[in-house]
Image (cartoon, rainbow, N blue to C red):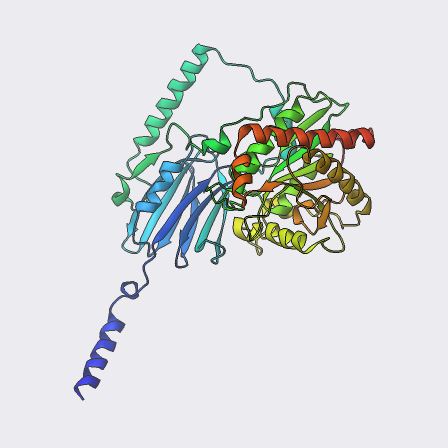
Length: 463
């Protein structure tokens, strides 16, 4: 009888105590920020699903993110340490308790933004991930951005630089003197001492893969008599590291380094022009890469990767083209499935219309394009054999999502196996990256010599 009364008392007490007392506390295991010209992504990772909501505030522009039941601010505050001064959208990040059950994160913005969020289930080595994406109110036009980068930059005088720096400092000082995190009616007294701003220097990347070369705009201006435009796609990026080598290197870093080498070499040729689909460490969906190449009116698409396999003895270079009918080998099918999973790992909300995915691609009635891709692939594979062993010795085909462009010859180059310890060490070497880039470019030029492009106005055309 006593046990029954005790159980009843406990039940009544539990009904009276506020529900937040029993709510499961959330520990943020990792906080990451990925700035890019097109959008900035903030990722919060946890073992449990994160409940969050956000809203924007004007004058000055801010984005406010409220997190429920988060119990530790240490990891969240690390976001400020990783915020780059060159982030196009976020100026500073402030974090603190809004009330006993809510942690508030305030993003001070450089410009007004639109935002979207998604909570992803655990996948690969990740737990639950809450992703917040900040986009410009008026989306960037890749073609206009590309053309703008071709214009010569006039170096400001030292006096002008001094004046601008003084104005920036005065503006920053005025902003920092604001006593409250948000204007009334929101109470933020508990956050008055939590203001942090972007560091003066960006986070230093891995020297082994980021130091070798920086791709610069071509020295020759764009003209109506077009250059042949090659879209160079560095595989993976941001939340999607790609394959991992035993030495600790990530595929995304290797591919970006090689892509920059290749882009710089292409731009040395007066008749060619290169554009990097990804020029930094951020994620672009697979279809978004193809869509961006088409919006840039590219004549060719070359995707750079560093192969992976379940055993470390797999080695050699490979080149792939799209297949409409199926993979040419079991290994090719496995690799295509592995690469196509990039969207799941990188963080694509399949229920949300991502700005990159808004452009509808044509039906893939593209036999002629695939035939051109096969010729290009064979030419590049032949040249890669001068630098590395070949994995199979022939061009292979599979259903790679990133190659599904209906009117642009497209290939995927697996430069070497990053899961092979010997090849991994080569892949992070600047000289070897340069050799691979030279081989790919020589293959491209051989293909163009044997298959002269139609004389149409590509860059300023209507594709």
